[in-house]
Amino acid sequence: MSHRYPATIHLILISPGHNYFGHPAGAPGEHPTHLVSAVQVHAGRGLVGDRFYGRGEDFDGHVTFFAWEVYRLLQEELGQGPWSAATLRRNVVVEGIPLNQLIGQEFILQGIRFRGTKHCAPCRWMAEMIGPEARRLLQGRGGLRAQALSSGVLRTGAAILETTTPLDLTSITAPLSRPRLP
Image 1 (cartoon, helix red, strand yellow):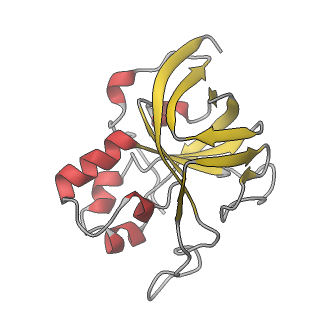
Image 2 (cartoon, helix red, strand yellow):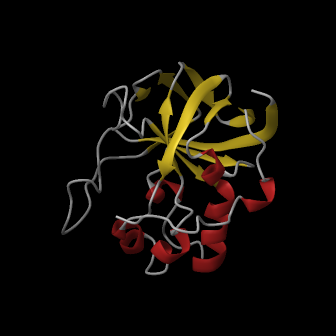
């Protein structure tokens, strides 16, 4: 990895169960979301204690990342409201990383190797939980699904992102031009 970028892990969130998957109508599930300062990452399995842990080595979403800058944009556009970053149901909220540029790329964060697999599309539940404009604002910037390729511990705080390709740090909040929505 020849390119290094300073970053910050602001939040790490895990939940033991699905609140939205399998809930096509009615209210979401009631599984708690836990804010943790560190989480064990297992290669090919994901984040210990999270609902996606152990779904298989080829599963494309062992961990989900979300940009702190997009979170702040949502707060600016929609107000603070009764919602929080936990409402987004992403695992790791990072600052300083253009997540969309990591789709299809391997990268290292805090010494742990990941492969960005695809965009994390916003769902209708986000509009219900955050507000009607949330889905539109998150279209193309809903986060990054990634596979865990090595094991280690992710911790909140300062981090270094390592990549093999240069990244454009000015486009962190820029949406993908043609995101796929569920």
